[in-house]
Length: 224
Length: 282
Ligand SMILES: Nc1ncnc2c1ncn2[C@@H]1O[C@H](COP(=O)(O)OP(=O)(O)OP(=O)(O)O)[C@@H](O)[C@H]1O
Ligand SMILES: [Mg+2]
Image 1 (cartoon, each protein chain N blue to C red):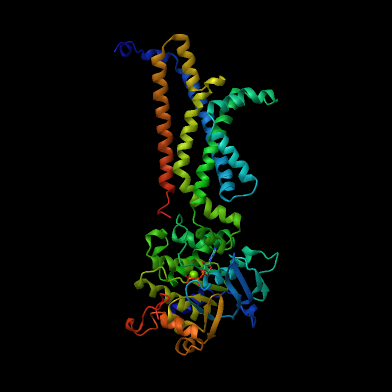
Image 2 (image 1 turned 90 degrees about the horizontal axis):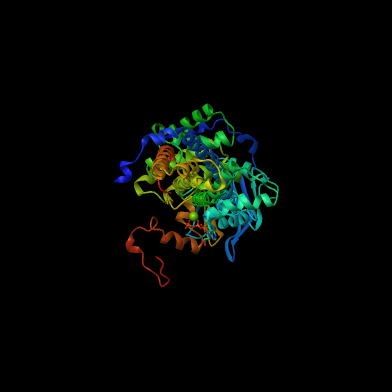
């Protein structure tokens, strides 16, 4: 009760500008990361589902590496190792690149599963109309399989957003990093973590609501 | 009903059928097709001329579906040649997608695109393959929906339709592309018995309107009344061919007789059938 009694709203208010900057940085890295994860997942998922030689094996290797190592290790790798081989990246770049690569791997699996769930007979219906194999992908496999992949890819996007909080370790001033440094200087730990919890809940809820709306619009009207 | 048949003919009026004068629309020469060791088509010769309806019957596994899929180039063949309007389509370098634009096919499972309304199912190919303006494609699609008896369904999704309605939409979807030949693969086999008629009527009218058709079916009544020619296939070979009534009523080959006897529609009553030692109905 002591903690609650000593909770100071004014303290959060005083730091609002810094927190707002952090929030914006979180959204920036998330937006790029999610966009990139979408494109990577789409392209590599299609390559995997169609078993395109070499490219498919490379994509599988990428997915395995990312899925089977902790994301923190991946972040450190990008942040500490890449500069040694001459690729030096700003914290912001490390932030969106890291979550994009992570989300892209999971999304590759989401889309692969979605595309593979499209019955061969539907693809043949596309071919029979005179679509080339690539146009059959664009007009049949993508719209149908993409819808099947939607729920699982949504979960990946939400994880991408939450994972941006790890960019604290590379000094990217996203929401978590900002809150962390404020409480480190002021010892207002409870206020700051309360802000974080509420902010992430709100963001994820908003994102979910947005995506559910999209999902409802795109939902396949029947089981295949 | 005859009226409706003329309707389909009118919808397809700008068919460039004239250029195929004399040449068969589809001609197959000694097609051999196997899946691994399983020989499925064993030297098939076949010819369909303009406006003709060829009906193909035969036991399950005899290769009927495979034959249609080969003609539509959905399956590669091991040897033999297939000609479409005089041009060999099985030789190297042929633009497969361009050939398929002129061959309509309707499957046993209707295979409508589940995410698209009926109207978009119909116009997708016309708009995206033929680059027809949307307005024109939709006009054509509406015409065809009237012809297949579904003018009020253009806004429906496939799952909101009965099997018979879905199959009629599938037929219309193939027709929008203005094919020069239509292939039907047991299109009524997945339907409840009371829905079979509405699909067969559409096909009958299409045949009467002058469409060239190859129809794989188990509907003997349809074969008899609509078919110009009937082919009986067994084990990848054409066993017997002729005027439908002749083949059905006076089959020359023992294998044909046996198949027709087993086919319930041809037996006068269930009483006449027994199970043989091989476990087949006789
Ligand atoms: N993709 C495939 N891979 C391997 N074997 C196949 C394939 N498609 C068909 N077959 C085989 O080819 C043979 C002929 O099949 P097909 O589907 O052409 O017969 P059908 O005459 O259409 O039979 P039904 O009346 O049951 O539809 C069967 O033995 C089948 O198992
Ligand atoms: Mg079949």
